[in-house]
Image (cartoon, rainbow, N blue to C red; front, side):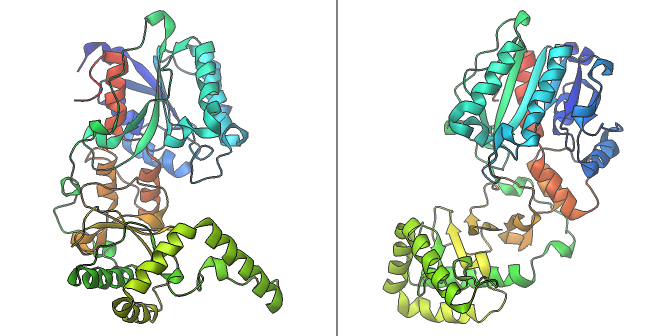
Length: 419
């Protein structure tokens, strides 16, 4: 531990459950103020660090804040995320950035460490980044010319999580350290086995109902193709478009406010528009089905008889890069775009939606909250929220501890970013 760090204080804004706190505490630094608008996050934070975070940071009295050397903030990502409507600074929570700037202007900390979603880098054709960079420059801070995009895979963590990490240094302290080359070449080999709990876990995480049916249906599909030596398509499979025009999908859903004739006309228009937008994928799906109809039709008919196999789970995205695998050898997630299937070397990005918790095929269960904590590099003694849904949401929204710690060591101690 660098002895210099012991005398450094930091504030933790939009603190969530304390990813920044753990990262800087690991370096010997002390948190003197935290803030988050989410009540449940504040409870978890206090339970772990014995600090009661403030609420809405825009209402904190800037002048009475304790002195600090480093400002950390995982400011709201929803205004910039592809999952939202990408309203950026037009969104109320997007303006939190400017509230943070008021604190920076008054207190003039030595360093700033900010984190946001990958999409921040390209949001509004790059104008959002230009505004952020210009504002930080006006506040007398150096930051890098282009957004620094890091992936947790670069740090040996078995989760693919791309984030923009904004590292800033007050100009009178000298220039920023030179960034190393950052690309996919930085990715390390990882395995989910490293975070899977070795002791038996509660049976409540074992998949049942719709998830179990979904696993079985797609497992039958994979076994059929493997036995016939048919390659699994790399394009998204949309079974409701194999032999129909999207029957049983939102495209053909009736509007109760319309008459039967009006619905027929509206649905035909929606079908035509959907086909026009996704012509290539739909044609690929139909060609695949037609070519293999003798073996796929019995599977399709029997699968549709299962009442729980409906909605988005009738779509599948095979992203393992290999054939000859079944559902007990992969990691899969039920998503709005379908069942996304990957190898077990790493998890996709954890998200705040509890309906999208990854399922570890070899155990036929969801990843547990503790395993999600490990994917976000939280310590083993971290006290997880006792409500699973809340815990999953909190880890999905958290910053990754190891990635932030390496970034802070690079910025403040001039240590290597990658080791």
